[in-house]
Length: 85
Image (cartoon, helix red, strand yellow):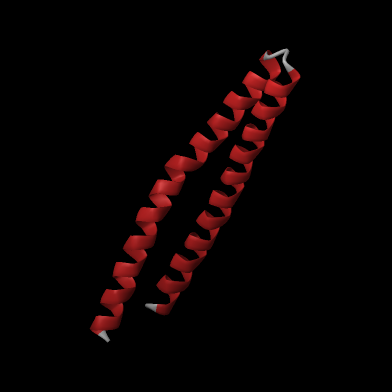
């Protein structure tokens, strides 16, 4: 029983470390999205504008994927904590 509780605690700590990283990275994806949007809005060359918009949209997509992963990890932690009670 103690061994199982130990494993649960270890797994929760691992997940919390990943969550800490995601909490730092998600706003950076948002900032990078805005950066590329600003570049797209400031250029007159259509090809360059399209390229910046494409990269901006990729950053927004990355942000969405990271947010989904964050929710999954938080759910897993909640589930593990309820299992350990």
